[in-house]
Structures are given as structure tokens and as C-alpha cells.
Image (cartoon, rainbow, N blue to C red; front, side, top):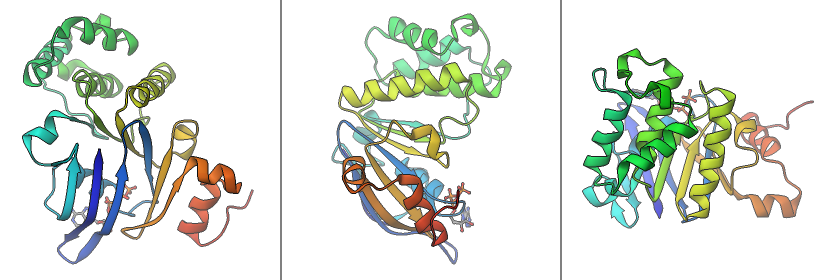
Length: 236
Ligand code: ATP
């Protein structure tokens, strides 16, 4: 569903991503982990089609910058950007029309109820708090029920109710067969969610692990993360 082949991104003389290759299959929740500067945001921006890169990125078998890929793709950036002068409900309508979502209103309401945004439907983008903008950005990305979903640090800035709702939604997307990729620093936040982990370090993928493999080998994601990123196991 999401395939990254030999992704390389060089900013002037900084190699931010070096030959990354990984896949996220239908019904899989994958996490992209790594310390500051490892290259996660760069990879996310390349996958989202916001940067030029070398290599190949395919979404549902289409090149990531094609219209067909974009139809199947939802991206929730770390910093939400809403339209200042559209209301919450107008955002939902606009995105639904752009993505040709059938019977969009009940779907929009369903999402807005889950994120406690129904009392904000007439508020303008510029009148929303940062957390509300983030929740709106999630609702906008998910209304078209994308087959491939990319979240960049989705839990930062959300209140506990929204975090729980988002985790439930990610579980539901997995059950419906979407491929979900989550980039995060917060190992705790994804503990019960992930099926596959990609650990990045110095612009490269240093390890790829399935949860089932780690459970079988008695490995812990946190210990592996510190082994790779600090060259030692975490102390206490
Ligand atoms: P963080 O966890 O701190 O957000 P990250 O893993 O997302 O980090 P990136 O932002 O992808 O890391 O950065 C990877 C490398 O690319 C870093 O060395 C960074 O300094 C460099 N870099 C990122 N953006 C640019 C840019 N626009 N121009 C030049 N170098 C950049």
C-alpha cells in the first residue's frame, strides 16, 4: 500500500535521508521513530509529496505525487494549517467536495462528535485553538477514508479525550485495511498501537521490527531504540 524504495533527500550538503526502503501494508500500523535530526520529518514530507527527492514512493501502487495517489492518501501534519476564513463545517464540506465524498454530512458529524467539535462548527479557522485546529485537521484528513494515512506527531497538543479517540480511530482504520504510518518521538503514546517499527538514525533506517518478532524474541522497542540511538541500553 505504501512503498518507499531507495528514498534519498539531500539539502545542499546535508544528507537527511539516505536510501530508505520500507513498506506499510494494508491493515498495518507502522511507526517511524528516531531522535531529533534523524530524518523523520524529511521522510514524511517526501512521502506527503512536499519535497523533491531521489528514489520511488508509491501509494496504492501509484507514484506519490500523482492524483490517484492523492485520492487514496491522508496526511496529518505536525503543525495544523486551517483556512482562516472558513468555518469548521465549511472545512469539512470543502474537503468532502474536493475528494468527492458521498453523503459527507453524517460522516463529518460523526468525526466532529468524536473529537468534541460539534459546538465549534460555526467557528472560523482563525478562531480555533491549536488543539482544535489539530482535531479539525484530523477530521479533514479522515473524512475521505484514505487507504494510506500519514500522521506526523499526532498526539502532541491533543487533550486526553482526543488522544483516546484518535487511538481508537487508528485501530478502526487498521481493521478496515488502511495502511497507517505514524512518526513520533513519544514511544509511550504508540505502545499498544504499532504492528511494525522503523527506527531511523543519522538519515538511515537502522532497524525494522514487527511487533510479533519482538514479542517472540523478548525484545522491547524502548530498549532497542536506545541501543540504536545511543549505542547502549537505557539505564533505569
Ligand atoms: P526532529 O525529531 O528534531 O523533528 P527529524 O528526525 O524530523 O528531527 P529532520 O527534520 O528530517 O529530522 O532533519 C534531518 C536532517 O536534515 C537534520 O540534519 C537537519 O538539520 C537537516 N534539515 C532539515 N530540514 C532542512 C532544510 N530545510 N535545509 C537544510 N537542512 C535541513
